[in-house]
Length: 444
Image (cartoon, rainbow, N blue to C red):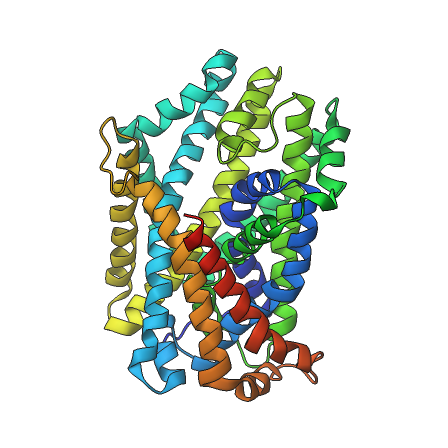
C-alpha cells in the first residue's frame, strides 16, 4: 500500500488536471476537431463530457480511493480475488505503451522548440516544411538523445516524491500553461482573418453531426481525460475520504475542457489567417503551424512559445504517468523507490526506441504497419476502450452501485442526480464503450 497522500484537495485537482491535459488537448484535440467539422464536433464533445466524461473519471478515481492501494493490487482487493488485478495490469500496460510513443512526439516537439528558438524554422523555404518534419523524425540518433534527456529530467522530478516532486512541478507547469495559452490566444485574435477561424470553430453545422463524428468525439474524450491508463486510479488512492470526489472531478474535467477549447481558439484563427487547411490531421502541429511561424516576421518568437507550451503540457502528463506507474510497481513487487522508478522508465524507453525506428529508412513492418502505427492502433482502438469497459463493468457489477454510491457520499452531505448516476454506470457507460470498441475494430 502506498503511503502517498495529496497535500490538499487543490493539489489533487491541479495535478490530475495536468495529467489529463497533456498533448491530448493541446496537440490531439485541435486536429480531431478539425477532422470532425469544428463546431459540430465541439457541440457533441461538450454533451459527451457531461454524460460520460465526468461519471467515468469519477468512478475510476473512486475505485482507487476505495481500494486505498495502487492499481496492480487495488482491483483484486475490491473484488476479493487476485484475478481482478488483470484490469489494473491492462491499464498499466496501456499507459507504458502510450507513453512510449508519447515521448517520441515530445522529442519532436523539443527539436522544433530548439529550431524555432535558433531561428532555423524561419529560414526554411515554405515548400520544404512538410519534408522537414520527415527529416526531423528520421534523424533517429537526435530523437533518441532527446528522449533520454527528457526521461532523465522526469527521473529527477519523480524521484523527489509526490509532494516535493510531482505536485510542486505540476502546479508550476499549470501556471505556465495558462499564461502561455492565453497569451497565444490573444496573439491569434490580432491576426487578419482570425474571425473566419472563430466562425468555423463556433458556428455549428448540424448536418455534419453523424455517427463517425460522435465516435470521434467519444474516442477523444477517453483519450483526453486519461481513463483506462491506471494513473487516475492511483491518484484516487492518494485522496482523503473527506474530499468530495464528484466536485473534484468536475473541476478536473472543466480544466481539461477549457484547455481543449482554448487550444482551438489559439490554433484555428492563425490557420485561417494564412489560408491553410484546418483538417490536416496530426501534421497540424508540425507542418501547418510551422508554416504559420515561417511566414510571420517574428515567427520564431511565437513558435518558441507555442512549442514550449506543447512541451510543458506533454511533460506534465509524462511525470504524472511515471509517478502512478512507479508507485504501482513498488507496491506490487515490494521494490525500492529507485528500482521501481528505473523499471518504469526503462519500460517506456524500450517502447519509445522501437517506435522511433518506425521512421528509419527500412522500418520493421507487421501487417504493413510500422511499430508506431501498431502502438497507436492497439492502444487507442483496443486497450483504452477495453480497459474503460472492464473498469465500469467491475464498478457496476462486482463492487456494485450501492457500495459505490455510499463511498461517493463521503466528503459531501448529499449527492445529486443519484438515479442518473445509476443509469450512467449500468447502461450508458458500458454501451458507449462497447460501441467505441466495435466501431474501432470494424472500421480498421
